[in-house]
Length: 117
Image (cartoon, rainbow, N blue to C red; front, side, top):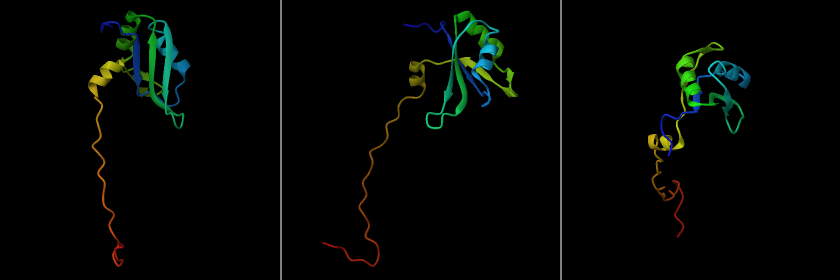
């Protein structure tokens, strides 16, 4: 079971849509070794959504990056940096909502027409 003190993934939001992976890597390399960067794109259009996940090499570097870079200006935008939530934490925050049963409706006969029996 993972303890909450072991954080390696960082969630970065409010990024400029023109930013590149190399620019994000340069910013976060100030705090330590960047293992990977995942820039989130729209599956249909392929356009960047303005958020990314950065994976640092250890917990100390991750905490340093969160503390140092939250609120930093990057390409004229103030970015938000926080610890990424796990799938279990996200499921606890937003439980799956079941949709109600779809009700069937009787077809209404348009005015001026007779019902066919």
